[in-house]
Image (tube, rainbow over the protein chains, first blue to last red):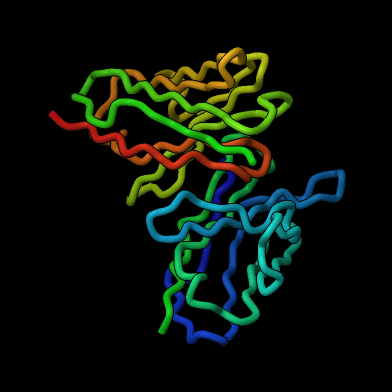
Amino acid sequence: DIVMTQSPPSLPVTPGEPASISCRSSQSLLRDNGYIYLNWYLQKPGQSPQLLIHLGSHRASGVPDRFSASGSGTDFTLKISRVEAEDVGVFYCMQALQTPYTFGQGTKLEIK
Amino acid sequence: QVQLQQWGAGLLKPSETLSLTCAVYGGSFSPYYWTWLRQTPGKGLEWIGQIDHRGNTKYNPSLKSRVTISVDTSKNQLSLQLTSVTAADTAVYYCARDGDFDYWGQGTLVTVSS
């Protein structure tokens, strides 16, 4: 199985400030077609996870442009340009390259 | 707007069979894959398996011997069965549209306790 490792586990942020979350995979998520099979999700308190980013850097429908993602191969980053109170929750990366799909352990974003 | 609505028994005894159903509303069932996942405080999010509209399945090897995912395309529903449950199977179970997991069910807490 591909192992996904996220950091930090907890991220206190002041509203309006930027935030960054890292994710590393145990093998490259770059397929021959040039796409990176890495997704990002946010699970808000009491809710199901929601898709933020797919194929490494593509924002899902309705996701604010303060969210961006980048990476190549095995190292990936999710950035929030200006954190808002509604961004509180746990962020997960997930590899969609091969089954079994696997998730990082999550990064809990909290407001200072 | 695609919506997934799931249901099933929330309290089981060890050795019983977990059974959950997920109905897909507002969108086409095919040509997508549909997935079951679960979430525990200890292991986090875990992919259980997937099925397409033809009934082709893939399972997580860690659960494969106990899992069956089936589909009823006439009702736009998918189902999960997990046999011989133990306390380790206590989790919130989710259905989701595979590919990007862009649509999720509301989650069902299943507790295994004697």
